[in-house]
Image (cartoon, rainbow, N blue to C red):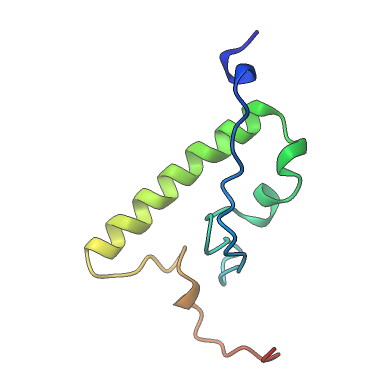
Length: 86
């Protein structure tokens, strides 16, 4: 039995479900494909996604410390106005 199978990997959702212009969730930094079917994904796949999220957070935090938001992960990076206005 793989050690990953012993522990349930948490869903990284923090309840801020808004996609930025690149398709990443502003709250948890997952892509659409990474978000959908989280509990149905194999444990190894979820572990791989969690590692990617660590890297994305590190890049985002480093960019913020440098005084420049990472346009790949920030919600405000899209200059296009919201056309639906809901």
